Image 1: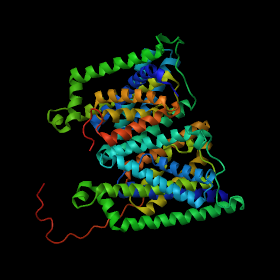
Image 2 (image 1 turned 180 degrees about the vertical axis):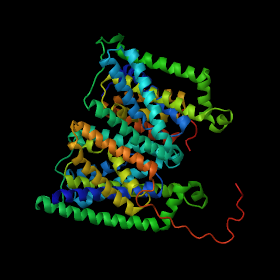
Image 3 (image 1 turned 60 degrees about the horizontal axis):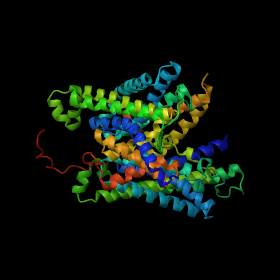
Image 4 (image 1 turned 30 degrees about the horizontal axis):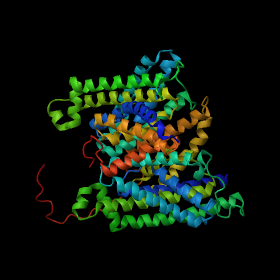
Amino acid sequence: MENYLIAMAVSAGIYALMALGVNVMWGFAGMVNLGLVGFFAVGAYVSALATTKLGWSMAAGMLSAAMLAAAVGVVVSLVTVRLRGDYLAIVTLGFAETIRIVASNAIWLTNGTDGISGIPGPYRGALSPEAFNLLYLGIVAVIVGIAYGVAERLRASPFGRVLRAIRDDEQVAAVAGKHVALFKIKAFAMGSAALGLAGALYAHYTSYIAPDIFVPLFTLYIKLALLAGGLGNNRGAILGAVAVVFLLESSRFVIPLMPGVTPVQGAALRELLVSVLLLVMLRYKPSGLIPEKLVHLPVPPGAGRHQPTA
Amino acid sequence: MASLAEVPQLVVNGVMAGTILAVPAIGLTAIYAVLRFPNFALASHATIGAFAGYVANVKLGLPILPSVVVAFLAAGAVGVATDEVVLKRFRPAGYITTAIASIALTIALENVVRFSFGNELRGYDLPVVRDLRLGTIRVGPQQLQNLAIAGVAMAALFGFLAFTRTGKAMRAVADNPMLASIKGINADVIGRIVNFVGMGLAGFGGMLIGLDTTIDPLTGFRAILSVFAAAVVGGLGSIPGAVLGALTVGIGEELCLLFLSPDYRSAIGFVAILLVLTLRPRGILGQPAY
């Protein structure tokens, strides 16, 4: 039981890292990534291939996973940065599908739908499964802690302020002399790096990856985590990730108890639950459990006197 | 991989695939033109149409033609209902929020289909017929029938848009919603009509795609990349553009078989999206994408 809880905590940590990354893109800069699972997949495959085929160390694999995912993020955002925001949504969704198609068919590289197994984990052979889980939880916790620190620093920095300005009104940010496109590309690359790193962490934890893990539903999990916790808010991202993992796992226990529901129907019910919850959150509580705190500077006396009456 | 001698065959295949692809692509682009957001729920409506047609064809024993009409009507009705109950409420929050809601909606609906029908592959009740041969080119009679059905549907749609009052009102709202409302056109009603027609076409297209192979709850989602590619290549919001875009993507996907294995076919759509957005974001016939 403890082992199961530790495994869940590791998942929650990986989800939290993804939610923090997506928060930088979506929460800070207002850029919608509907294919974030594709960046996660890139990270997982890069680190898995680097360690199993090239014999790199896990640290090098994870680093290259984050860097390659960031590079992909630059390309994807570069193509759409000057277009209406919905083009980014279309391109990211298409990207995730394309990654899945390539991963399923490039058998020489990814072993196709059979997936890659035997991905190394830190001291996996030397430790008992319990000790390995605990060690991995420590590693994930440290990485999430660092990511949280970086994201918080980012939020409070002038850079974060510009991103929020872009999110709220791109034109105003441009008029204030900010290079909007550059800021957006940087934000998207940073978020993608976190997603890629999370993918690598996932691959080294489970030791096995296959294309059918990287389904669009995964994107909804992270979106739901971020929405539940509070968009634009780093503490909320972590809280939301924990809440989503708890929800997914508890539904795993509850649904089989329902009479006359086949396993396929149970899985369908779970996915239905997640998507409906996302719709409800998005509609009724878009600010989440912990709403983003915005600092409003006091208005200097006399300002706004000349506002035209509408 | 295909050899150069097969180019005519590939082009013929591409035109047929493109014509079928044009049907859901028109639906997508019409909804985009009037309601101004990329409706990813198109995927599940294509699946719903495919399954409605399956019920009509296999369970009720109807021939293909009436079954295709059932697919259109069922997907259209579900499209109006889900928009009324779900997506409409998101529109005031902006097009990005609505797009996210539409992808959650598509996964929800897909799972309703999965809950009811399960994951297994299903096929339509089709007579087995021999391919027709024209010189070296082979064509399946079923594909020809699909081509004809898609062609007739598109002709009907163009007639509807060009000659009926409702069609003209739809174009007016797409062109300038403010001016249309001053002229007394009810945008709500137009929104419902465009959802019915657009999602109906998605369901229709879902069934046409399924006629060539098999259907399962993911039928629509697998096609969505090509459908979006067709709409983006043609120019989001332009209906003639969607037809041209679909033919371009259809033929492009086939011709790429000259140097790519068929497994990567759907990835071509993504490459097409990237190329068009880089070189000419408005697509072949669309309006500026800024």
